[in-house]
Length: 340
Image (cartoon, rainbow, N blue to C red):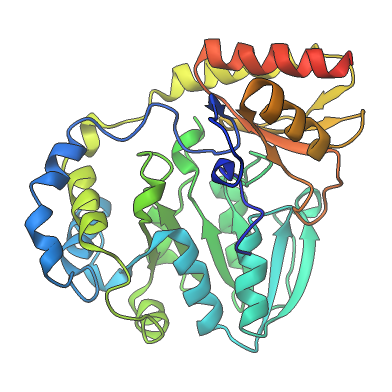
């Protein structure tokens, strides 16, 4: 899906004051990253590493893994397309609502698809497909499954390859990452993103983690030079300074709770539970598209119309917590819209 994602303000004329449509951390890229990248300027006259090997090595050290257990990708999206290519003409279950690129990647590579609603998943669930795609935490709902539940699912479905999207794992206080389980499950693949936590989506940087035999098979379909020089250097800078770049998760979740509660008080707006900094809302008036248009043209605020997520209607929209004063702008603007 080329169009239809969040952060699509570039499609609209005029300045966006606050972007609630993107789940990227609101405080911008790490301090010092720009200066570091400018020191690498001369390197753009040369090809980048064919497979981002130096970053692959640093990520392996960071996660206490072997480089052969990691593939560095051009954002998490390249990872999903690589995995779908690896699985081509097989079958997959997608837990919905979910990130659209799971579906699109699988369709392009002719997978037979089965869709299961998030609410139907339990630790005893069984799947008859070759693979399963799941966001944890999930986009767009912000809901999550515990490590115990995921471990049970992996144990109970040994013939199904679980693709766990951990793009938003840093945006919750729950310790749910499955990285330390990689050696225990040959049917586990984790997709990671550095663009959300560290606010560098324009650089496109992600990676796949799995057991080495899976990585070797998946990597056969990867094109060279998919990760550019600046992205590689940004990744190495982040890994080197990771202990100093932790998200202020407690404050972020406190701000989210205030934002969530304030939106709940608006008549005709339903707000859904979340475990992250973003969450779904549903308008009982008109549609999410109407609300998005009103907010853009009258307040220069951008929300995510969530109507194109499979399983959601035209009344759903998603918002991500911003700074408290910015959150208040949206609260006031939506309240005004409901009274028109």
